[in-house]
Image 1 (cartoon, helix red, strand yellow):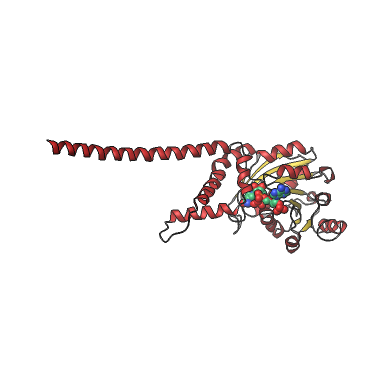
Image 2 (cartoon, helix red, strand yellow):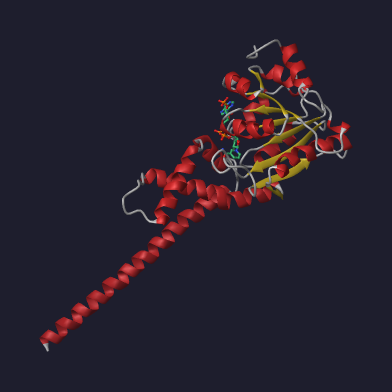
Length: 305
Ligand SMILES: NC(=O)c1ccc[n+]([C@@H]2O[C@H](COP(=O)([O-])OP(=O)(O)OC[C@H]3O[C@@H](n4cnc5c(N)ncnc54)[C@H](OP(=O)(O)O)[C@@H]3O)[C@@H](O)[C@H]2O)c1
């Protein structure tokens, strides 16, 4: 059973709480009915802004978030079938990268009122794009996105923060394309820097940047670095990087590696870079040793003359 009230009450509430239940009825951006699948750290983080902007939200997740949802004014479903029957404009998938495939297998797509805009926020992009294209019929529009910020970096607002998106498959139909534009408007309104690029390009760049950042943070955590009375600014930055990285789940980090085909080459480049630095260091040490030995031999020669 869902967490609160009858299904009919919830559906009625969900429908009526949207002042513009159909985006086609207004030319300016409309309030949307958004269903969130996966209500963990990121799902809750994004929901706060969606609620603030006046969108009508419902949520489904593996765990029970009925209390937190009722506090936020969000309709919570404990059963995926019942969640899917609600008239949404958008379904936003915010589960872990690792569970994305299983979650799609769980969703009864035949129960979802169509047309429907499916959006994901996964930190890798080719992986959800390929899954969506595999399981979704043409009645579903597909928007792959990656808000390049989270509960930490976006805690004081989203202004100036990058929002990556790829309109993988959006119907030219006026109503359907407007839903997509209205969804993107949410992030424009918050001042995000809107970055449209292909999922492939995203994964290449994110492997070079985000994956390396998380890897460094995880390595610093393994090193067990601690603050000292003589910390430099540089070291304080490393502590901050470690702390920020470790707030994200290991599932997220694992997903960045296992579901981005470009991550392995960045891992190898990292290993190579460590070896290159080590070689340079040892070479300098060898030079220093050579100099000491030469001086020692020269001194000995002088003594014997
Ligand atoms: N954190 C960030 O800064 C950030 C930024 C941009 C995008 N993202 C993306 O947002 C998504 C969510 O990230 P997150 O930070 O909330 O942490 P996460 O650990 O990547 O994902 C947690 C979410 O996945 C669900 N989940 C995990 N394993 C599951 C399973 N076996 N079956 C069903 N559901 C499962 C959890 O559900 P329950 O809580 O119900 O167990 C929760 O909703 C990820 O795809 C991530 O890449 C995160």
